[in-house]
Image (tube, rainbow, N blue to C red; front, side, top):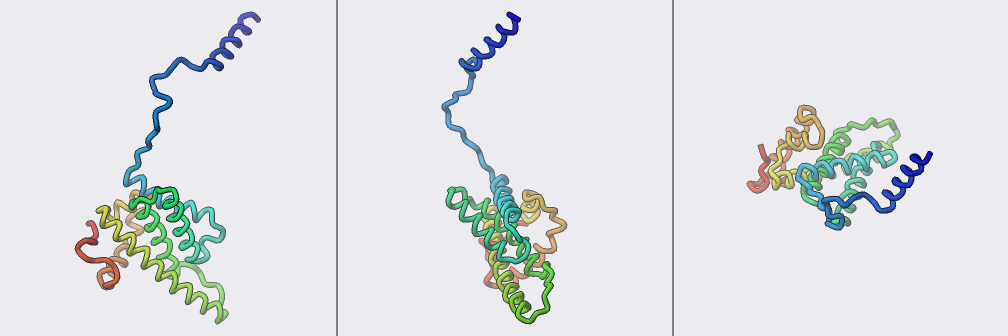
Length: 188
């Protein structure tokens, strides 16, 4: 019994006075080193997290547009809107919007009014997809990041996305309003 009291008293004293001093300066600032890889992943993950937390996310391209706007605004507000972060966010938005713009969503209504709404929505989706691709491609060229590397960083299988990249690279070459000048050459 005396021994248990002594051990309990020793534990209480240890908790009150703390552990012996450590070699770490407890008042030193903590720095977290970010990398291009971690920023691209953070941008992509931010879009994915937004999608998970948005009711009815998959129902229209407007939710992707809203998520990208929110993600970029939040990063800018926190002063964490690095170019690699934007690349990850635009990449995720572009992939999502390409699916929607290519008719990946089922259209259930045959009502002429709804068909017209879908047609307008599809125009908006295609316009946004084009804009996201343009932004993504410019940042990707600035950072000299290949398509395959971008997929690997964001956890997408390049083989599954390669056809989408190829289709858009052809559009980029044919469309003068998309970047294809020397300063925006795609990394091989």
